[in-house]
Image (cartoon, rainbow, N blue to C red; front, side):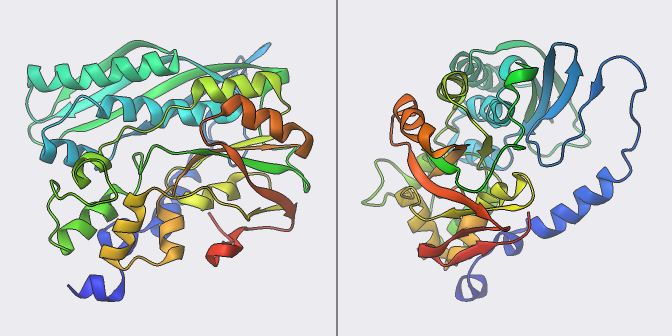
Length: 343
C-alpha cells in the first residue's frame, strides 16, 4: 500500500522511461554501419519510423509490439483484439512520415502452440490490417518453451511515400498549430502502470465503475485507434509540417519534432474516464499521467494555422486544435501544470 500513498509512477511499476532512454542511447551509439551503395537509410533524428532512400520514393520501416496488454488479454481470456493493437502500434508510427502502410509482418513467441488462441490473435491481426488498408504478407510463430513464460506479440510495417510528400518535421515553425485526434482509450502504452494500480488497490478486472460502459478490464482492452485513413487524407489535401504518434512517453513525444521549437498544448482534448479512475486509485500525479498515458489524444498533426480548419473537418470525430508551436524548446500544457524538456 506504500506505493499508493506515495503516488504510483511508471518507474515504481517497473518501467523507468528515463533509464529506458539511456539504454536505447547505449544501444544506438553502437549502430554506426551504413551502406555505401544502393538504397540507404536517411539519418534524421526524432522520426517515428526508419526512412530508406529508394530512388523516387522513400520506404519506411517501423516495428513495435503489444506489451503487457497481453497479460490483460490472458486475464480476461479475450485474444481477438490484441492483433489490432499490434498493427496499430506500427502503422500509426508509419504515417507520421506521411507514408502509406503497404505491408505488415507479425512475430508471435509462445511457450507452446495453441491453435484456438492463435486463431483469435489472427482475427485481430486481420481486422487491424483491414482498418489500415495494409497487407499482412507473412510472419513467424516461435515456440520457445525454455524462454517464454507468457506470449509476446510484435510486428513490423513497410510503408512508402513520395519524396516530395515526406513529412519529417523540418518545416515545423513558430505560428503553426497542433490538431489533436482523440484516442480510443489507453491504447497499448502504460499498461504496466495501470495493472499495478489495480493490483495495489485490490480492484478486480471485472469491477464496474459508473463512468464506464463495461468492466475496467474490458475498458483497458479497448483496441488502439488506427489513424491511417484519416491522417493520409489530411496529408494528401493539407500542408502538414509534422506528425506525432502519442504513445509511450505521452506528451514527451512532441519533443521529437525538430529542435528549436516548443509546443504549448493550451486546449487539450478531454481524457476518457478510465484515466481519472487510474489516477485516483493510484494517486498518480498530473505530470506522471501526461508522460505515461495518451490522456485522450492518440495522434497529433502540426500545420499552418490557415490549414487547421480543413484538417479538423477532414478528421472529424472530435479532432480539434489543441495547441500551437512557439519559439524555444519543450512541450507544456499550462492549464495542467505540466512541462517536459527532454524525451
